[in-house]
Length: 411
Image (cartoon, rainbow, N blue to C red; front, side):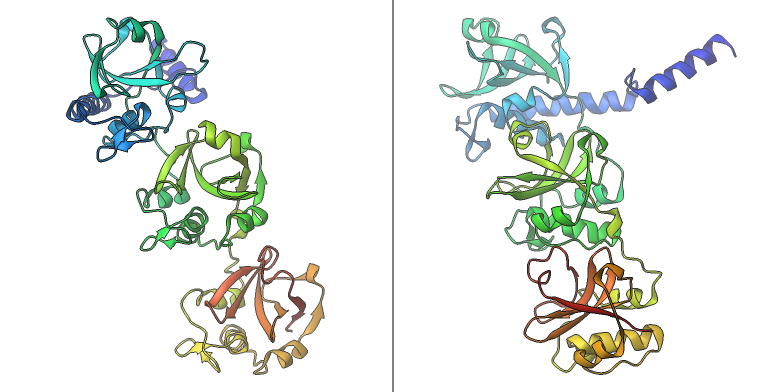
């Protein structure tokens, strides 16, 4: 092996284990330069806008980090919301190496964390938002205040790439979708657990419980050190006590979430707000539906597609609870079951809940007996008055988990 081949092999290995950063191509450098130019141009257009605490849009005004976040977002680069969290992103730049487009950071005397940020535009000037002048130019070196409070600079050339996995790619399709409490589709908007539920169904055909608390209970526990893109991160004590928020891990320390204060967006797990409320990670690969079972495969064909109908016995007209069970067993296995739930219960062999296998029948007792087809991993397919053919996790559902009445196996 010649010296050039040896050196090439070293570079490849070093990149794989993280010792070196891959060299940017000319196209990537050109794209980064273009984004920097666009960011500076956009910042200049905003000069004269007012200062507003918490502001992050032109129509309302800007605070320092809101201005930086807005400028970079216009070029497809998602940054954290606070100055302190923005400080944690990007590559450090020495003062004598500053280039237009870098972010300058400052802190007040006695503070340990940065409290202010501005966009460097060249010739020792920055564009920032201050309480006294709003969005304005400032020569930070000539100002005694800013020169003495300067602590460093960061360079962010591009948005960190999110993982190329089915769940993450699906979630990314809904970025900028409005937040709507109770929302669970792109057309109506999403809340946090609605987004997670919808993405998993679309990407992996995995049906998750509707609420964040129920998803948390149904998921497989994963240590943070073992997290991988597509896992779901849960948080506590956001708008209520206990598990109350969820987001899909996208790689690079970021997650996609439906934020109550914004929309579907990308956030950083390193942000102080999320670090304080982090509860854990869950994985849902074990909840994939075993379609190799003919009864399960047939039953799941009608999920979300067929409504409840009193007396209904076919997908064309709709199903009642027992009519659905009778139809599925006839179509999938050629087995004729009695018409009503009480007699369906008597037609099988009683089994313990711990012995359940896909295709077994599970019965719940509410106002009447509700039959369901066991899918596996605590999940059943059945018909409810409100949603028609649906999938329920009987171990986590606040309504159904305490109504279990028994199980039978149809031979």
